[in-house]
Length: 390
Image (tube, rainbow, N blue to C red; front, top):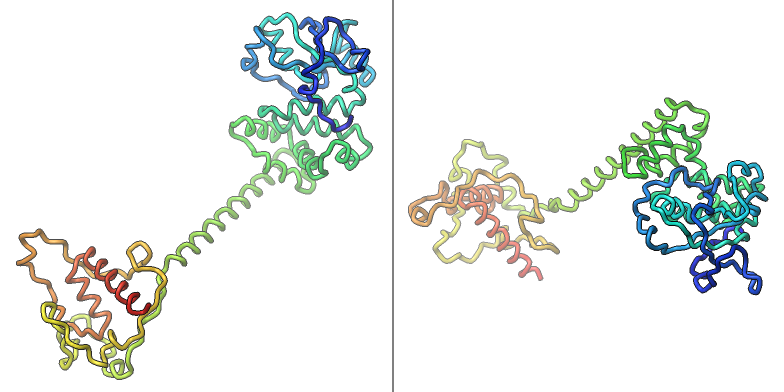
């Protein structure tokens, strides 16, 4: 029976009788109606507190689920020292599963409870404790300290923790995690319970890791608290490191590829090394190179023109403001109203710019065009390069 959960569904077809006992013909437990006062609470219930019973107020009118119980004789064979605590009479039963339902029936004035009496649950201390534990573990408000106490009480019924794990279907690490919770100071255990209720406290995972620290059980509250602070700080540092790594990877993915366009040797040799900031744009441009005016048809580019001779930069993505981070641009003109656009003159004529000097050309475009126009020009150039290179 060890490790086997009791299924009430399998008992749904059992007859309901008015007298205690077992169906002698089938040797199977039967359901019976019992006075609520004759249904005694389990002294070994793993729940310290039954909690708020308002969710079971409807039991006053109807009982949706029966209770599992054993006879006092079967219970006292396991724990004879509980005789005075139990205080059972010959017609009483001990509720194993359904202690909250029993308490709610008592609170809201229900006179009888439907009970399934099955002494096979009391085959051993481990089987009875496991039957009581299984019902409580299914409840979300069963706090982890109560669970840990119940699990360790079951494990104590076996010679070793390994045998307990094999018999109950648990892993040894699962048992160790619950044992670690009981190594903590009662104050820290209270914080674990508070966190499980949704309040401020210590999470179960942190508490289990804290309980695995060597020598933690012998430490005082101050010592365990110091270890807890170190553990939380290490977790915070790890989270910060992961966030920084993600941001760095995201920035690297968004950064544009820095691949300067090749320049012909002759043009590179003839280009000035630097241009003073105060030198006019017309003086910085070679006198022999003339760019076509915007309104005139574009002449056939000379072989030395890097725009025509340079190998176009291949890209798998279309250029746009969203997937690029351009260098800071010079101050650009605002978009003029429609009636002023015809009279407004740009500060620098594009015809006076050396079209072989990419930086100077970019500055002149940015001074001449608005930001929106400059981005549209960049899109158009990128589309043209992608079209010619495909």
